[in-house]
Image (cartoon, rainbow, N blue to C red; front, top):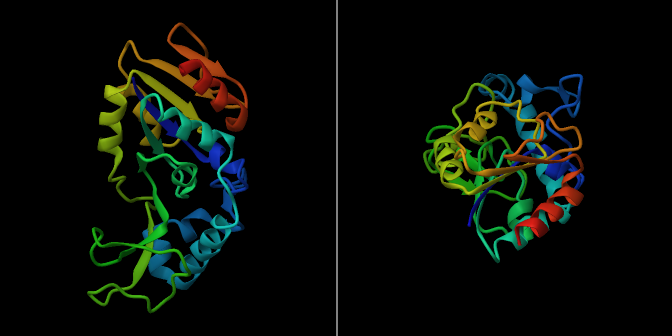
Length: 223
């Protein structure tokens, strides 16, 4: 059985990673446009690099939780592709082998000159760290106003899936929120969220709980 899993910040939050932004629109005290836009990077690259250096340092201190581990377990019996809006590597660390990162990856850097020149990067990224073309490296993160290069690949995965699991995402952020529209009419959808934004029906099973308790239940059902 082909299973597509769409994960958002709620999955990583239970491992201790701060969700994207608080209700006041700030991210760790920063205006998101200051640290998550090409304009912000052009204005003050040092602030942006420091912001992601702090995120990267925090990432190595946290561990995958029960939701990550259960999704990795699902691979033993099914063809599973995880489509995540998260920029951490917790799915991979849990053992998932087929992960599409819609919004980039914190543990990678890329050239500000050639967007296809991407490097693994696990330490601090500083001003003066340059690619082979002598241009500054930047975080490999999809910022506001930038294209989401993996969205078409993700849509194709959802189109082919027999089951779609949505977990830890409000389904409010586009283009990721539009992916559910690609699901086949006979595909069953499992929605795991403590405050679900969609209602249960014949096609949709809703588990109104956190990822770490809800996802293992869904995995058990699919065994």
